Image (cartoon, rainbow, N blue to C red; front, side):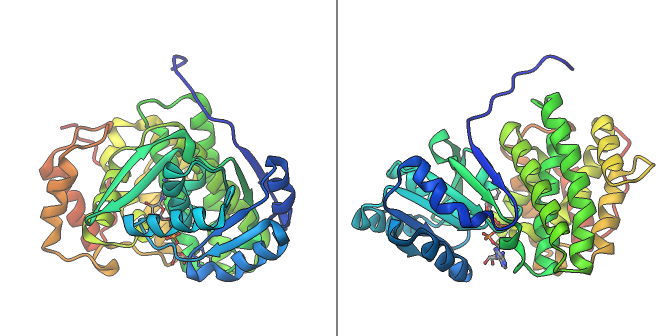
Length: 360
Ligand code: NAD
């Protein structure tokens, strides 16, 4: 157990209510004079507030980010960076605008300040993703990792309860897979277990009472821990399944993570018993049925539990199983096409998973 390598790149994290208002000071610390803001059309209001806070240090708002960073959207942003002679980017939103800013700095190396508005965690990683000809390619480069993150719970307040839940379970998935990652270490395991605890404790409260800012702050804290674990270790079957379903079958990112997580946990249960104990503990459950506990948590909070309800076609189940089996990521339990197809069928039907105790 105490035999590991742990590498992180420096990053400043500023956390707290109304901390978004410190954006100008943070940019001043870097000596940035010409900040270009990157957002989606949906986060325009937040982008405009940041522009006001930056005053004459803001050279514009690029509000054209869309999901999965299509290649052509990068060219448009790079042109705007060149035209405005921007010397820093401020990405406001979820993984889509942060992902677009990351892709742009691969071409024009600029520092990024991230103001996340979801729990997906892209702001914490060196991973970039670009969609070319309908295929999402990913890679790692330290240059894309935001230099500073401002986590202001106020920025998550506009997320409706249903989106908060699935975004939070997306973060929980990073924690579950970090607990059985091949290159896990004691620090990432502490972050992952505490991340699940914080997310489980807060998401239910947000669903009941969307204006509960303490719960929103705790969920953001859980999201930060989850993304930190994600950035430090490798992900496994759950992330592979979610990438295939999102990338090739256009299923929505966070909802897909939500439906798949209990099934991926059940698949790996007998090969990762310590991880499953940690997940169950973090969810406040005595027994070690982590998969069932995750499923119950999602269902109790009205989250999606079946691939059919989030738009999957039955005839795509076998195709997806085939793709997941090819170039599979490391996974504690070996991947077999028959077993993956069974997993996807159960997820398609929305069945409560039963941990698989038989080793293949
Ligand atoms: P997103 O940025 O696409 O946002 C999802 C939806 O939520 C959008 O409709 C958006 O408009 C809306 N939204 C965002 N913030 C909101 C708010 N505060 N209030 C109301 N609505 C809000 O999604 P995401 O789930 O954050 O990120 C998913 C993307 O990020 C995927 O493309 C995924 O592959 C990528 N990702 C990358 C990494 C990485 O390390 N590179 C990590 C996680 C996710």
